[in-house]
Amino acid sequence: MASKPKKAQVEEEVEAEAAEAEEGAGAAEPKRRFSLKLIIIVVGVLAVLGGGGAAGFFLFAGSHEGKPAPVVVKPPAFFDVPEVLVNLSTASGERTQYLKVKIVLELPDSTMQPQIQTTLPRVMDAFQTYLRELRPADLDGSAGLYRLKEELTKRVNVAIAPSRINAVLFKEIVVQ
View 1: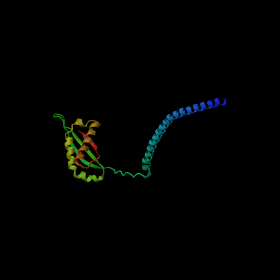
View 2 (view 1 turned 30 degrees about the vertical axis):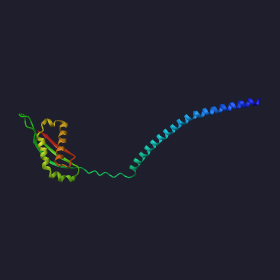
View 3 (view 1 turned 180 degrees about the vertical axis):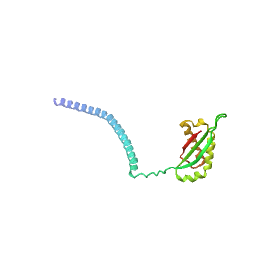
View 4 (view 1 turned 30 degrees about the horizontal axis):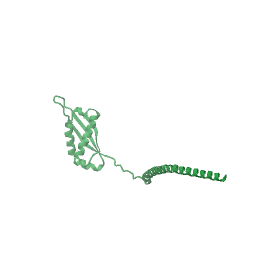
């Protein structure tokens, strides 16, 4: 009989271990799901980072392989425009004032000089008609000269269209 209680005790222990194993298996499944999700997230993040790093490497490594082609910068050419002398627009009764301007056109390259030479009468007409309408107050300060420069550049570009100049440069400006 003594052996029977031992058997009963062993059976109870086996049943208890089986129950614990079942509980352990049930508890292991949620951990397994969580760790599986974690693994998927980590793999996804690594794939994104690895793909971005690889794309950056190929973009930048490809640009450093060969020597970049040297950029040939053409020096600008300059074209002297004849001196312009105009009387400025004044209110009646005021003393007449004159504007004397020596202008140089900055061209993108020297191949434009013949075109400027052929359209020079149109350019001079644009200068004369604009400058005669200016008042002495329009030329006050650096802002006035900047506006004058921009307006003359715009008028030259209209006169020589479809070509364009880079800038109008002043050699001399005298208001008397």
